[in-house]
Length: 403
Image (cartoon, rainbow, N blue to C red):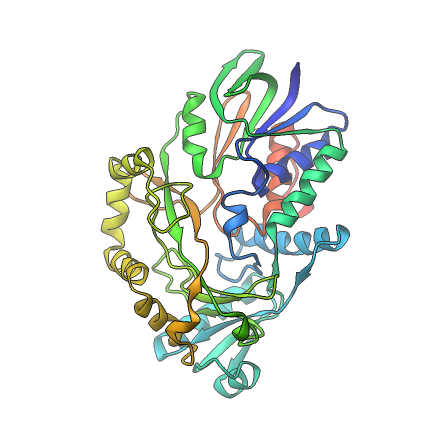
């Protein structure tokens, strides 16, 4: 059988793309291939479940607009599909004079991005969150929480209801592009499609190379280690609590996040993962590790952020150091409050000179589109991202405002 479209990857971006292709081409043959036993097994199912408002991104940028539209679309999709979500809001807390200055700049950025935001002082912060201490904070009331596993599952149901097919447990081992089709070989069979979209996340660079697509990056796995508070402490906060980020660093810092199941997570840090899909504390995949250590981009990244790298490693090795970062804004936390929680792994595209790719990165051939980098907030933005990818694949040109 010749499919019209094959999508590799059952994460939220891949399934969103399939859902939008079903809308574009009713009755088309659409196949999603996922090597795991279900959807959302990796990045989608291991993130903190935040529906981001879009305050961090450069005004007018692609990421800022996608995030803002994605937040609206995600909430609407949840409401339409009876998926539980909440909107507790977020507090970005400044604990010293330097962070207060950064907070002011972040406020201006949020306003420029048309995100509702309010400055509050130390007294108001204490009133709203008695366990949190700071000189001031930004209140972002539209920040929400959800299970992106449930969102992806609902998208999958829409795909199959529209006549699409999702096959689990099929690992792609070969890609061949011919003038009239793409041949996809898995460990269980062979499929042909007129067009292929690869949304392979942590394996994105490898899937592209299977198809002989020239790319300029490699995926480095950054491991985010979380703790969770004891159930008796789940009422400690009512908002999501974030530190003011350092704009010189690529990550947002350790934060307290209310989860949709009522629990509170603490984290993440960001250390190099020794396995792209190994979530245990000491998980090692020799192929993945060799891929990282032999890549010039890894050493270039290390040279760019030596202090941050050492600090994150210290947080990983010492629960006391991790706690210290949290106690800057939540001084009543103790070591007994940091219970084990499964880690997440972020797929970070890195150029050969060590530059971290912060925006979306695609590689195209006549019949293939590979999503090489779908950075945070990809889960929040997945609905408009999927729409844009689907547009691109079918040749529809639409302005972002219409997505």
